[in-house]
Image (tube, rainbow, N blue to C red; front, side, top):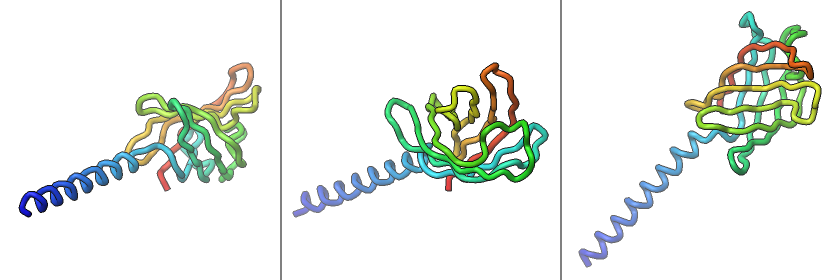
Length: 141
């Protein structure tokens, strides 16, 4: 009877340990919904909205976005409105293209993933590689 109780208690502790570890790794996952804010090169807020990142195979990501323009920003590219996104994760960084189907314009989000945040620079470039950049911060919802 004593062995049965020890086995039962050990099993319960093992299951608790596994569930806690799974919860920690899921909390650190870069996939899910983010509240997004973008800033021009002067640091002025130009856009806010949401980004949703789906989990995909081999470090590739897909998702969607919806960002409203807060102030005039002729040099911000196509980051306002809504659309489909594609990108990839490499180590602790994520690279996201907000306009993957547009061959003439790219609006990229390039940033680090840490503590429930995805932050870095947005970079808008045209087909001749001319463009502008600013910063962004996306916080897990």
